Every structure is written in structure tokens, then in C-alpha cells.
Length: 283
Image 1 (cartoon, rainbow, N blue to C red):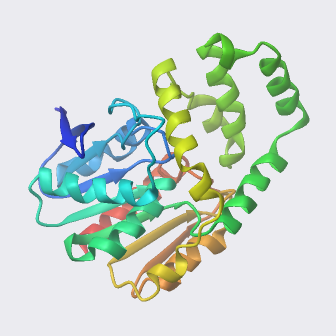
Image 2: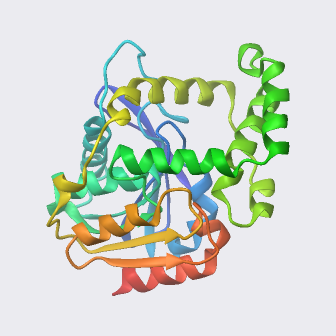
Image 3: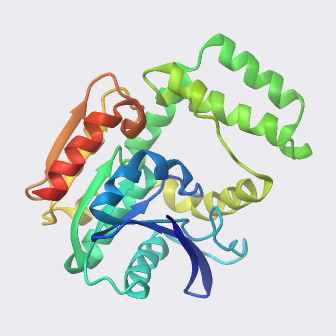
């Protein structure tokens, strides 16, 4: 049974969803600007031994919208995690961060490591903008001629101007195909943007665009000593080198490379991914 509530954090409302009991595990979704929904079903079975907390990051999903004229930075998202931990009255937490959420987890560990029991980084966003650009180029190069023609056809209908959510979600689905090794998963996992959630994503990503255009956090985390598992699919457009570098920078971390797997190991290699996560949490 899920328990949902809104928590007031830094003059904003963050939507939270909880299930299970035991040591708390807080999930950090991808983005910036996405929402927690896609993480719930794949990880639900962990609730038999842990309290799982999913939430929509500031300005995203069911959380309150951001003021597009108010400046924000990555550190604001990191501070939200700590404020959320305090609001939930947890002495320590485990973080599971996927993609953009993985980058936030690392920065949280660097700033608030004393409150962190462990962290799991699943195909984390690159630690610098150079690796990020490589990943984006790989995404584009993997699009087929048919993909590009369909994208062009959709854009000719001006779906973003008309708020045509069917067209927009199809546009997103095609652009996400390069993240999957097994294309059948890309076909089955359809985006579920609403006009509201899309508008929020555009605001969040727009506010962070300049900071994310040129960044490097690897040196900031060198020597970080946090119990860490880094998981990376070998077919992820994000370079394997990026996640290996995280692992190298974090003392005592474990690196797991999954073969024939893209950006979503908990979908394409669910059993193997969850088995390793359970072993890690119990170690």
C-alpha cells in the first residue's frame, strides 16, 4: 500500500510516495525535469525489506512548478535531498540514483556524506560536460533513417505549439530508442507526459541549461569514501568511461558492467540488476 503526501521544502511542495518498512531507500529520478513514476514498478519488490521513498524533484512531475524567473542551480536539488531526509526524520539513508539522479547522489555524498549509509548509481549522468556531449552525439548517430523521417513528420504538425500530447509522446519515444539495447523495450515503455509535466520539464531544464553546458564534478569528489555500487549498461549512450571514473574516484566502490544493456538496467536486465542491489544492500 502506497502512502503519498506533499512535503513543504524550501517554499515548495515536493510530492512523495512511500511503501514498505525497514532501512530507508530514497530514489532520485532522471532528468532534470522528469518524474519518479518509471522507477516504482521495477523496484517495488525491495519494499519487503526496506522503506522505499520516491519523490518528484523540485519543479517536476506532481511537485509544485518553479518560477521561470527565479534562478536555480544543481546544488538546490542536492539541498532538497537533505531537507527531505530531515523532514522524514531519517538519521541516515541509502540513495538509489538513476541518470541525472545518480549525479545528484554523488554530489549529496560529497556534501552530506555523514548522513548517507550507502548509494547506488545506475547509469549516472556523466560527471562532466565532455562525456555528456559524447552521449548526446551517440544518441543522434543511432537514430535510423526511418526514425529521422518520422521525427521530421511529427515536427511538421507542430505538436509542441498545438499541445498535441500524443504527438509529443511519440516524438519523445522515438528519441529515446537509442537508449535501449533491446528495441522491444523502447516500443513497450511509452512516455506518459501530460501538458503540465512537460511544461515543468521545459522550465527546469531551461533554468539549468547554462550550468549543465559546462561542468566537471569529478575532481570535487576525488577521495570520497561512501559505500557505493555503480551499475552501467554497456550499450548506454553515456560512455562506460564516465561511470568507471565515478567508481575510481570513490574509495572502495564496486563497479558492475551489464552486457547487452542500455540506459535502463532495471528494465532490460531487471533480475540481474535487482539481485546485485539486494546483495549490496545486505552486505
